[in-house]
Image 1: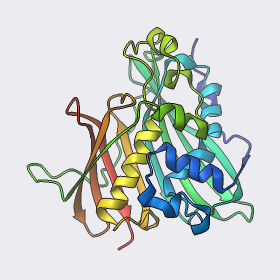
Image 2 (image 1 turned 90 degrees about the vertical axis):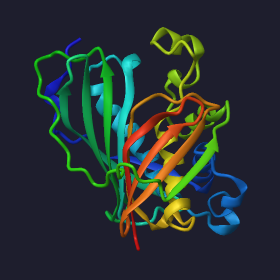
Image 3 (image 1 turned 135 degrees about the vertical axis):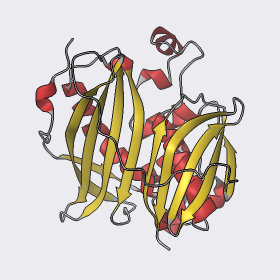
Image 4 (image 1 turned 45 degrees about the vertical axis):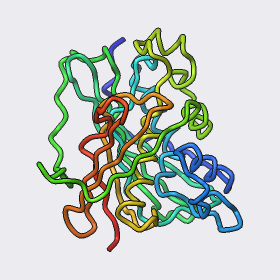
Length: 282
């Protein structure tokens, strides 16, 4: 089925998303938060909300944009994710998200759909904006344009050891836990479905789960364990991760408040999150 290019640059209707502190804690657990991160896990301390939680109210409006392309959803994988935080997310709120397809690009073997979202509170205050790149495998070669080149925010310095390295093993059930934050794709739960769409090894971890681990690790390595200091972060999902594998985030402080990042899987010594970076208040 041909992709519907007419949806480009046409914002969808705003979608509301209401949540409580239980949802923010469930998200934190889904991206690996441990008992020493109690501020984000216990309502007696707020709880505080991890800045990457912005992908939760983003997810359904973003997915609705993907559906409107007419692409085969069974062939969809997450290619890249970025978030910019404008204000701290509260532990309980009703938010409004507007999603818009910025472009649909032809990579010959696959298509890339770039989707921007703005997330505001009920007063209209902008809390976060996000950019998602979604890959639809097998949907390329439709005669479209290549994506425009993007400016590089922070690059890993060649030949330089990282300023920090944080290693953390995911659980075999990590994807089953993360999916409770709203991404019900059977690719992350059903072995038969995963094999049918090319992942014979089994269900893969959500890219946004790996993203959340990276954000937690960046906060630990560059912000003294305070995620609220992070104002923006992005990664490209270069390779799949399987639940139970060990994620290793390496970071380089390339300038004040600017961190270049790379995420690897220890067991395969393979980079799974590349062209990654974070910005932080100094």
